[in-house]
Structure formats: C-alpha cells, structure tokens
Image (cartoon, one colour):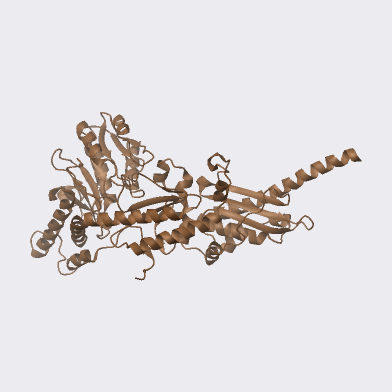
Length: 406
Length: 141
C-alpha cells in the first residue's frame, strides 16, 4: 500500500474528527439548529435533548453523573474555571494551591495570575522520570491549601501521574483535587471515582471530536464542589458557565466520547504495539537516543525521544513530510527549549534534540516504518555535520567543556 | 515557519562539511555557541602561507536549518578571500543573502563570530610561530 504523505504523528496537538462524529453533528447545524435554552418550542427541546444525550455519553466515559459535566469551549477554559473558580469560592478557607512544574500552560499561567492576586502557589518539581513525588506533595500541603491541580498525562512526554494516590492524599487532607485529563481521557481508563478526582478538564478535539468544545467534570457529592463562574450571563450549565451551548460541537463531543469508550481498549493496545515498534526500530538504527520520561507510566501512544548531538528543528526540516513536534527552542515562539524537558533535569541540549511522536487512530504500521527509516537517515546525516558528535566521538566530555553561552 | 529556498538548498546540500587537522599551523579553528542554547558552530579556515589567501574552509554545525545554512554560506564566501577580507564579512550580509527572518538573525551573528574565532585562532598560531622564530634568530646573530 502506498503511503499518503505528509504523515500525521502529532495526535497530542489535535486529532482529526472521526467521520462517525461528523455524521452525528451535521443535522445540528441545519435541521436541528435550536438553542438548547429555548424552553418553549420543539426546536429548543430537540437541542436540549441532544445536549443531554451527549452529557451522558461524556459522563459515561469517565464514570461520572451527567449532572457533573459542565460544557465549556475547551480544556483551557475548563482549567481556568476549575482553578479560578475554586480560588474565589474557597478564599476564606485558604489561599494556597499546589501544582507541578510540568503542567500545561493553561494551568501554570492561571496559577501565575492568581499569585498576582495574593494567592500562594507551590510548583512541585518532578523526578527524572517526569513523575511528581508523593512525599513532596505531602510536605507541600499546609492548612491553607485549598486546591491540588496535577495533570493526568503530560502533553509532551506522555507521562501518567499517580492520580489515584494524589486523589487519596487530597481526600485524606480535605483538599479539592483537579486534574487536567485532556491527554488521558479516551486513551486510557479514567474513572473519577476510582481516582478520587473532584474536577477534571477534558477536550473534544484531543479524542477525535471537534475543536472548540470541552468539559469540566465537577463533583456533586462527597464533596460537593462549588465554583465561582468566570463567565457571567444567562446562567447556563447550572450557573457555572454562561453562554449559549455549542450544540453541534457538544453532540460531536458526546459521539466521540462514546466511540472512545467502546474502542479505547483495543486502540490503546494497537498503538502501544506501534510505539514499541517505532522505538525498537530507532534504537536498532541509532546510538545515543534517549526516551524522555517514564516508560512504565506512560500513555500508550506517546514517544518522546532525544537524538543526542542533533538539533530538533534541523531534524524536523529533514523529515518535513512527517508532522511531529520538537522541544527545541527554535520551534517555539518563546525561543526557549521545552520547560517540561528542562524540568526532567536532562540538560537543555537534550531538550533541543527532542522529538515528540503522538500516534493515533489512523496511524499505520507502514507509516511507523517510513518515519523510523527516514529519521535514521536524517539523524545520521546531521550527526556527520555535528561538531558535538565529532567531539563526543573524540572522547570529549561535552558537559565539562567551556561554552560561550550567548 | 517557511524557509527561504536558499536556506533549504544549503540545508539539503551543505557546502564544505568536514574537518581539517586542528594542529596544522595554517588552519584556524573557531568553535562558537553552546549546546544548551541550541546551536554550536565549528568553522575552520586553511590559509595559504605564500599568498595569505584562504584556500579551504570547512564547517560542522549543531543547530537549526538557518544555522546550518549560515555556516555553509560562510565557508563558501571565505574561500578565495584574504584574512582581512574575511574579517569584513558581516552577519547582515548573511541575513540578506539567505533572507533570514528576525528570529533567525542570531544564526548569522553566530556565523560571523565563528569566522572571527577561526581567523583569530589562525593569527594566534602565526603569532606564536613568529615569536620563537625571532627568539631563535637573536642568539645566532
């Protein structure tokens, strides 16, 4: 079978909408266009019914009650609502929030804003494998701590945090626990009760649904979580998120959630096999390549590898018919290498040399083989023109050299 | 980000990749940049002792496509120039030739630094060679 180029291997960034999802959405643009808040005519009733069906589909995927699902515009909004909503609502109880240095910017920057408003935030470091230490978490907790927010799976390195253990600690201490579960939900089992999660952010477009729609799971019992809204208006979503509901988007989100629930187990197993194949082939063809983050506690469809002595952007240029991401500074707007990889303590040079592979529903074995072969030849070529590779082969320890940092 | 066709050409067909013996007195070596900054360039010039003209230039670069292209272009320009002409190459010349966007200007700066470092190393070697020659000449006079 001929391979269709370019190859998409950046499923952590976004996913294509599953055609079955599109099919479910289409009627809600035209025939069933009603406003779900219109209570007095069938156009509204139809829309409301569809939204409630989707709410159940999303709830079922994470073991929640449909009433605990608040639809939002996406996970960035969900993160903002959870963190700012708790901060405002529980201000009298305390002003301390605990998060981690490898969180998504939607969490980190929200916490930074709260710091300006007088809140205190602890950014837990991570260990070399990308996991937070439960001892660090315990010792960060004070009687002023009102919220712990730790992501389930990291968007760069795919590392899955010990959410159930963190949930148990939060429960024991009576602290609310939010998790940005965007990369995990629909990919690995995620049950809000097993994990003792009080709030969870989810996004449709990371699980083969449309962009512009997400949800925040908000626990209603044991404990009942109260949130101050960040968007005021007509009081939709039990007053937590005003604004006319994105009915087609929500319908698509629901369908995507249903498909994930049905197909997740088989899909994860298939993708794990493909990731292992990619890893095996790369290791067979190249020396000095390093997997970033824990291998054992990892999403099945993620591989993040540093190719020593080769800079990430030049590597991407060489595989320009493959869509992947790099932690290299040159590929980011800030010209800073990935803060997630830096947090692992592997050194900035390895962050500059990293590639993130995100496999997904339509990734094939042929694509994996093509990408592996291409990478091996490009890395080999770039190493031949790398002064660092030359020095390393001469036996020079690069870490002890005097560099002119510019 | 879109690359200029010249950057792509240098990236795909880099000129003068390689290494010359560092201990050769006629070879000047410059190593600039730092791995943690994401770019390191090694640039070498070989000067003809009779003519004072750069006969050969080689580079190796760890860096983005623009860094590779900047150093590749520099080696092309260096060949056939005198040491003093080489020192007159400015990073802005590289920026213009390769149509580098503002975020990639540091690549051209690094290439200029590499040229200066390589020539500096060559001059140091020549100076070092000249001093013992004079010292040796005095007692015999």
